[in-house]
Amino acid sequence: MLRPFEIHEPGTVEEASVLLARFGIDAAIYAGGTELLLIMKEGLAHFPHLVNIKTIPGLDEIALSAEGDELQIGPLATHWDLERSPTVRKHAPLLAEVESQVANTRVRAVGTIGGNLCFAEPHSDLATLLLAWGATLELSSSEAQRVLPAADFTLGLFETARQPNEILTRIRLPLLSENTAGAYRKFSTHERPMATVAALLEVKDGIIEDVRLAVGSVGPLPIRASEAEALLRGQSIEGATFASAAELAASASDPMDDLHGSADYKRQLVRVLTAQALMEASGRAAGETNEG
Ligand SMILES: Cc1cc2nc3c(=O)[nH]c(=O)nc-3n(C[C@H](O)[C@H](O)[C@H](O)COP(=O)(O)OP(=O)(O)OC[C@H]3O[C@@H](n4cnc5c(N)ncnc54)[C@H](O)[C@@H]3O)c2cc1C
Image 1 (cartoon, rainbow, N blue to C red):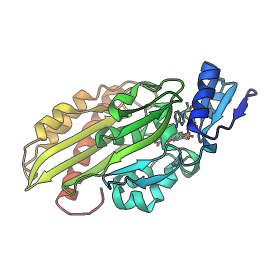
Image 2 (cartoon, helix red, strand yellow; image 1 turned 45 degrees about the vertical axis):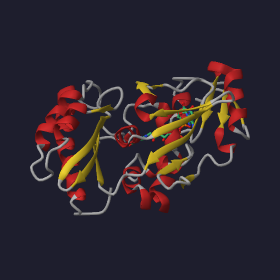
Image 3 (tube, helix red, strand yellow; image 1 turned 180 degrees about the vertical axis):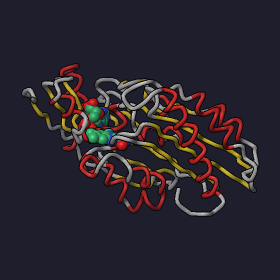
């Protein structure tokens, strides 16, 4: 049962930050509420003060930057907004594709990308994708604004680099070069994924110039599979050793035993999903489809 709380409705990010600083550990930011209200209903946490950031105009905007080189996503954009946005579908179709597979319709309709990232629940599709993508996150308080790479934002299980008075105000996604193709693979038996893999391949004249590979949902936070990336860099796309790269990604993934499955089972999932994601990205790079 929900214990009583007071809702605050700031009109600006600065006001929200001041409220968060004033109420300290008694306050939480309230976006879609799909995680927050659940833990409050289950009595796992109680916040007497909820700071509803949906009253701040503009935080749900999705737009191309003035320079046209990155997608700028407001934290209040819901999974549904991102799945259906013509701007996202045109400039970052892989994001729209991943968003269409998040959770269920009810959660996608109200759950936000900002809430997903800030909650740092380990079974996050977006955390894995944005790590591989090299996204950056803008955090704002009444005192300052800073920009962090996605790689430095998630610190562990339900833990981020966000300070208590900071609000995630923008997610910046650099547009992929025309030589870059991506693919995403996940495996779920419940609503949240048990293993996730994102692969981005930059291919020029048949050679893999760059590769970014992230593995998530098997451990406390997503990781880059750097040894697998190093193996593939410089290989020809035709003869690329994707199976060996998948083996390295599985070894690096450091899975946990939990209710979703054993560590060995998850390691095997990573092996399979990595090989599939790399194959699909290479097919896309070769022009088999223009998604991603
Ligand atoms: C049944 C179910 C299935 C799910 N399946 C998946 C899945 O398959 N894949 C996946 O990736 N995710 C999944 N999720 C997670 C889902 O994506 C999140 O619940 C949702 O995106 C959270 O957004 P929200 O706006 O509801 O966050 P809220 O519940 O409002 O907030 C979550 C946390 O983030 C903080 N917060 C929110 N916005 C900000 C901000 N802008 N700045 C700073 N802090 C902020 C809040 O204070 C709170 O601590 C699932 C969730 C549920 C309930």
